[in-house]
Length: 373
Ligand code: AMP
Image (cartoon, helix red, strand yellow):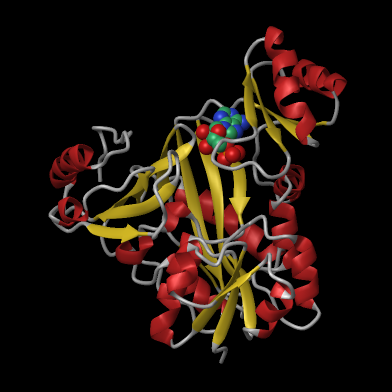
């Protein structure tokens, strides 16, 4: 059995992976620019800026994984000469480029919004002719939390959109999807090919950043089979090991895939308390070649992100049944610095808890009044 997992990245996802690994007596090490990162409390951090940092990191562990999806492929290639990485390089390479990702979805018959590659102003104009307006113009690489995107609604915005995103390199234009809500599905695949899936999460965003997730997504029984089928196709095609996330739009024509993340995901943090085996523990189990744990839900759960500013811990912990996770990050506008898990017994208690939480959290909470569990 593996004793040490080396993780590319040292943020909160790595921190929570290492927290899940500890009871299994599995240590984690991390590879991150700054050694003062959220994962540092849980294991040794090797600086990617230090001389021979990568070589030392590779020596530090038996098997490797990642929590940062823009992990440089060049680093992965050096690693692969001597050690295994889960998930596989191919999954990472595809997820790092929106056009490759969409091509894979097409190949596996996973529905996506119509899209076009855009490499010039002429391409952009042609894409508008082909797709119609509105479109969402996105950088093919490097975007996150809604950054690197432009919603183009009118022809007179073309020059502005091109001025903003054109210099970023390869772009993708997608038809604007009219969706009723956004959901995500998370699944884990073991080294023996076994797949386990969590229920769909319903995700709510504020300023492009995940504000909260409700699990199971209300009224999602009809959507779950298709979502499960899509993510299983991806996992098996990629011969994937570990946790994979697929973000989806719910439309009146069914589910449309938006993007995949080859890692544990913010919309899966609920599973630490809400599932028999969390996304973090199951990822560790998969990477270490251990049997996977049950993905059953213990209780419907709402996960609320703490963004920008810390609430008072004592206020949060005074809420009935609330769990608080702080990432040891400094406060900065728009930065995810922690999350809160609520596990109400019914919708009435959830409404009360959400009202109380809204008065405690410094960040504006886009908590809807109509959360139904
Ligand atoms: P992404 O970086 O692709 O996850 O996009 C960030 C957010 O932009 C998504 O969560 C959606 O709310 C919105 N979005 C992205 N693509 C589209 C699209 N094709 N149509 C409508 N909204 C979109």
